[in-house]
Amino acid sequence: MNNKYLLGLDVGSSSVKASLVNVETGAIAATAFYPEHEAPIMAKKAGWAEQDPEMWWTNAKLSLKDCMNQTGAKGEDIIAIGISYQMHGLVCVDKNQNVLRPSIIWCDSRAVPYGDKAFKEIGNQVCLEHLLNSPSNFTASKLAWVKENEPDLFDKIDKIMLPGDYIAMKLSGEVKTTISGLSEGMMWDFKKKPAKFLLDYFGFNEDILADIVPTFAIQGQVTSKAAEETGLKEGTPISYRAGDQPNNAVSLNVFNPGEIASTAGTSGVVYGVLGDVNYDSKSRVNTFAHANYTEDLNRLGVLLCINGTGILNAWIHRNVAPDLSYAAMNDVASEAPIGSDGVKIIPFGNGAERVLENKNVGCSIRGINFNKHNRSHIIRAAQEGIVFSFCYGIEVMEKMGMDIHKIHAGKANMFLSPLFRNTLASVSGATINLYETDGSVGAAKGAGMGAGIYKDHDEAFSSLKKLAVIEPDESNRDAYLNAYAEWKEELNKVITK
Image (cartoon, rainbow, N blue to C red; front, side, top):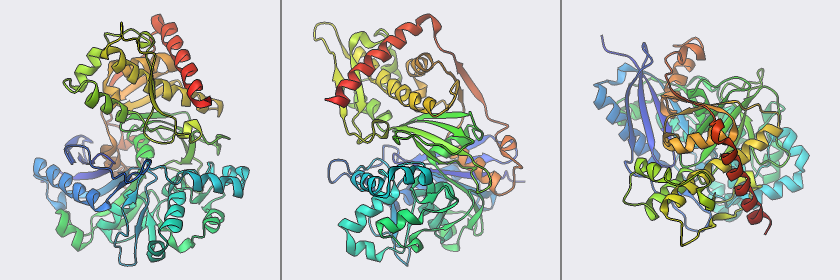
């Protein structure tokens, strides 16, 4: 008898990753991602970032095919599909489900003025009480930019969706979304309905929204056309979808208040679950419906996002240490002392940052002395700057009532660096637990929950493996905290100049 698998697809801005998870054992049977190098991001103007949704679909098919080849799995062996995706992107399609323009993705900052204007004119308190955020640079504001700047194209739009909704549409032929998805686009009113007041303000008809389906449920089935393109079996259920950060929390079995998940890929995130509706009055961190939010159960995800995380580390690799692997870069960084001997990097070179109230301060390298500093100081300062930006946002979360003593993370990306994770533990005072998982595996397990294969999240994630525990370095904590305090001084100079 053939093994049965759950398929997870993780649609990122760098690649699309697929994983097949064995239903019975929970083990990862195969993983693949495409393209092998970072996917292109189109930036026609400063602050813009777009991708072609068809590229995601092509890479999803390549990744799935690779996984099927690795395992010998046939279409009938894959019994449910889950999708994770880069949040806040805007995909526009016409009545024939044709894409009308490239997707304006998460790190595109052109819509900031539209969101800020809405926040002011609708009223800060109204937005915060209903949306839990400013409309800011989220999906609704991006659509407002399209409406003003591309009116002829806007008139052709039948439905808007998020990147994961697009992949689900390609599989099922149906345009659907979730409450969690609407909330990340600022189109869900936490008075338990779509945010009609914001749609009316921007001049959007509510019909432009996709139909709502539960996060964990049969949301659609693979069509004959998609089956022919992918090798999947017609009728296979799509039974889960969530944005990458709620999904990352799901993959780490983070469902309940007080539980924290973190990632440090292209962008960096600390994501904590609240059981009560709450928000930051300055919208520096954002509150969304978590994956297990329902109209009867308040489960909110508080999200701190730092745009310039892995992308800064990659920039350092390309421009400062092209001869080194990332592992070798970590070794070289450890040659410099805590605090990088006075070198500080403000890591905000990837657009406006919400934690800085949507200011676009750029990246700066400060304090270099040509007579004593070398690339070890720069590499370490980059990693420290990323950690310090995390901790800067964590302070905001703590003021909201979030109690952060333990951070769950996958052993991937920046968390592969001992220097990065030791610095984060020591500055934040939190214990870091590292697990063997990723977004595509979490999406696969989510699909198992949505299809009723697993009775609950504890059963779905019973096979989750803890790989390491990192405690704060108490012997050097004063040095870490001093370095953080000095970094904050430099940041304040940048913010207030």
